[in-house]
Length: 226
Image (cartoon, rainbow, N blue to C red):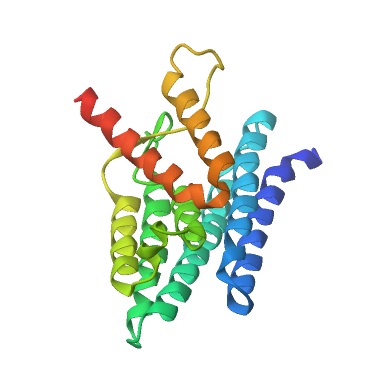
């Protein structure tokens, strides 16, 4: 018996653990810390699939476990961060609960991905890790951009738009490299370089703009193709 066959599921479990710890952090501390748990979860989420392919030990249970872990780390955790922001800004008792539409649509997104075998070169709908990075990084926005998180209406609009993007029938390019040559990867390398530049310039406050750029470039790419 090869013990390495359990490594991908162990990494997936660490993704899940990161999401759980992030939820505890948001419940008992400032929402600013949540993005670090999301980033750690993203690292484990990347390496569990990478390891499974490298060891040729992909399995149906691994696929299901991956979705369950993603639901916690990239669905429930960002919803809770949005709930905290809405609860801070809104005087209405029930408005903050609208944040959990992000969790509902994340679940739909993950369920659709599990039964769709075509999403290899691209994604249909916004990937849940990208959505989680966007939502949890909003708390880092500085003036004048922080106005979007200072009103419950704008936060609800963000929640509605990103809930829709999770299940929208639009193609978004995947940052998967079959080769590392420039030819055929021009868009991916350019996006990565631009993202690194923004993050170096503004740190975590740049993350919302990185994700918005990703969505905008993907939509433009689809529009030009058609």
